[in-house]
Length: 552
Image 1: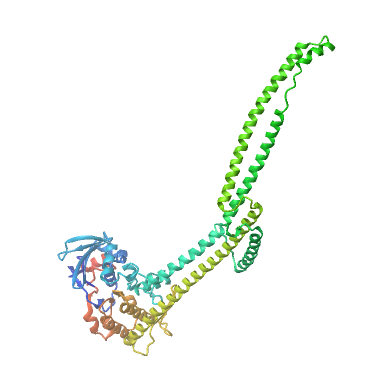
Image 2: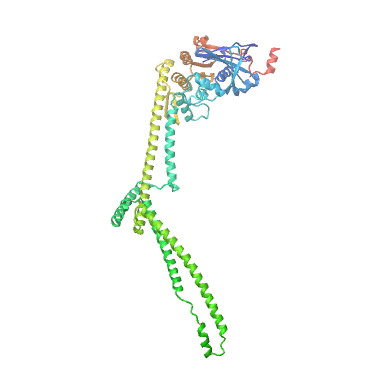
């Protein structure tokens, strides 16, 4: 716990104040009987918050401007061991670890210091940061976290959901709910991804129960056709994989194309063979008898023509021979391809004589069957994913409701017990209702007075101090003055029974008991402040010129 604060800028009538010591239970920052302002009550509460890792103290512009840069030294004690620290307004992002003589040992980033406090206060297992868990309950003027109707708010615009999440963190239930939320998000993401796959045709699925039923009917019809086809073919189709059947059908089509090409080439080869059977006609011996009938005929010219014809015939004969060789080679190659494809069909397990039409019908029907079965399997998967999403949602809602009810009941019971101590059994106790993780209501039924509602907020803080690892809380004058005097004194008596720490700032304490300082306040006052005895030895709201005139 926090045991000491010291700053050489804290003065009383010019002298540096000695260290301010704290203890468990109630710690009172006592103001004057005249309720003087600007003497440092709120500032000192903010200084305590600063020692707990807060930053609101730095926002106190008047203090920083009037005092200037300064360093605050403070001590925490855990398990009998003291830990000394300092934190400067110049470098507030670091907390310095000191030895007992205030010599620096190490410099910790503020995040590391807050993590250390979280560990030392036994809050390691809790989700959330140390400041996130405690800051809301240091209800100090200027922090805007003291709305008695919204006591879980850490600042004016804070959401109810944030407040409830902090409550779950304090009761160590946040991660349990978050785990269920993660399961639900995962289930929702899986379902969404599966639907997207269908939208982009990566998978096809029946979109509703009617379509799935129609698919079932079609599946039955196709299976019946396949059965008939298998019986009619008598080729062992029942044992053929649809992919193999489709491959076999493709092979047979390829064989048919190759055979048609072979037939064309064979026809060309036959034509060449027919041409080679015709010998060129030689008419040279007849030219002499021709001259008998045509004495003037140019026999030599006719012989030249006949020689040209003979040469052409030889060229054509040679070309036919080459063409025949090439065509025969192509025919041989086609025969090899046909033989190879037939062998592949035989390797599949079918004889090459299986009808292509039967294979194509079988492959087409099995493709349709697979598509429909896949669509229905996809629909079944989608239904399973939806059932999983609903199961996760139901689990989350059921577990969340159970946890919130348990927290609600624990807080209400504790507040009811302490309310009887504070103001008697006749007064209605505050009540919190948390129907979901997004909203809550708080107040005293049938009593909307500000003082009563504020008392309810104080009792809620104390209930959390009792039921959770919350290490401390603070209440400022602006809220305490809303509550009637006898209730305040009883609250203080309640606070003083705690083994943890409560810091309160109060003034006009004498008015509680007709001019005498109540014993509970007297015994627990850690610092007294009043006009002339301000926290820093001076007030910020005094006119310096007027102060000088009065001094003269």
